[in-house]
Length: 175
Image (cartoon, rainbow, N blue to C red; front, side):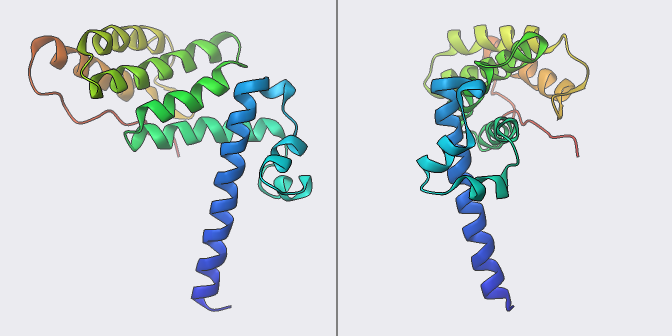
């Protein structure tokens, strides 16, 4: 197989995988993990169920993929989109996981508020996000949480004091 064919196949694979994740996020939003089936996801992207299971063995794997997609969107500074994807996963979570996801959602919405000029909303949500995330270990949810919490605090302080804000926070995954 030549490189052009391999590259085209990789592009098709990634495009199909992204379509499945997007469809799953929409279904998660409406029905939650318990109400979602792989058959529903497959039907929404014109595939058969076994095609979806090639990418994701079980529906819980799709929920994790949506969470990871939220991280990608956040790191691309697509904060509103990150919040939407994480909210879909948050609806079905419980306990510590729910509070953790709430903190991530608050961070994304805070930075979205900043982008629309709502500094009061941004500062308020940055503080609530920091408070919710600070209770977890330094590395949690497959991310370097301590670095994110520190960055959110720096952002809030910059906004409150009127100095230029630092670089946008990033969510660093634990490899």
